[in-house]
Length: 87
Image 1 (tube, rainbow, N blue to C red):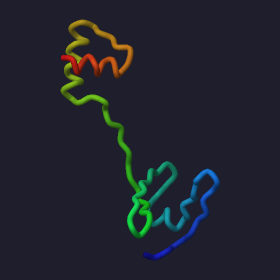
Image 2 (image 1 turned 90 degrees about the vertical axis):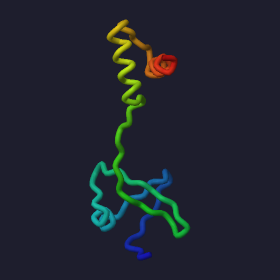
Image 3 (image 1 turned 180 degrees about the horizontal axis):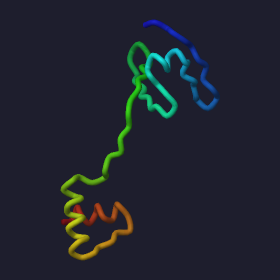
Image 4 (image 1 turned 60 degrees about the vertical axis):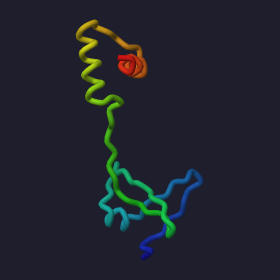
């Protein structure tokens, strides 16, 4: 492994990724990074995070059908999911 740069960690556990490493990884303001732990050390890699629906397509279809039929309104997503699970 080639060491390109070093950085110190703050008391809050924060580390500034050196500019040369940011350039190599293509990191910009707002980029998301993932950390992996190996026997040799830590791997830092760019990644993307996407939102995931709490419901499957089938569950959404059931919810939409019930709402259209009865005009049901749920107090929370958990209440709606519990109702869908009981169908």
